[in-house]
Length: 231
Image (tube, rainbow, N blue to C red):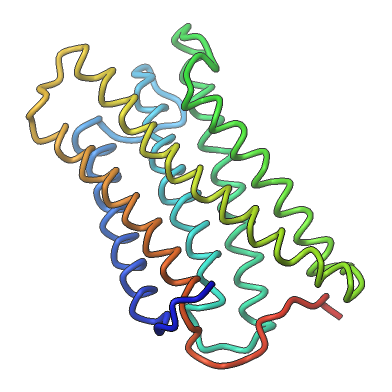
């Protein structure tokens, strides 16, 4: 399904929302939550890495990978490499982001995997990894036959869209979970930090919407968008 509209305006909207969301999560983590640290006496600084990497590294870079075929007037092979590399970076940063949540919990004696957000998160990162490996083997190197690529492409796209929808929804669920925890522990419900977290979640959701509007629209150049193995 395609909208018949040009993808470029939607991709610009996605880039703008990505920038806004990235700035807001950094302001929240550094200004309001005290900063980022891999090792610290204040274990909250370790946890602060989690939302930063999951939003900027996983959601935003993953979204940029998805729209790479529609965002740039480049040759198909170049777009393919951008798509592959951005997804790989998003996957790696997502794994590190999840690890920091476990690291924080383990060092503060908080149980792991007790919330819906954590369950969905593990499922998403697992499916994302499987999707990347399958895509690499079938569409990049060594590459499947033309018949396998043709039959796999619709499912590759559909599963990718499903994973990304769930990832964006789970990111918003994570913001809600963390904000609820902070408010239970005394954070003002109508304070500036609470508003910032909510608006960051809204920006994240809108970014996901613009990612989908982009991929449902026409690419800048009318080239061949089919997948083929790298020679």
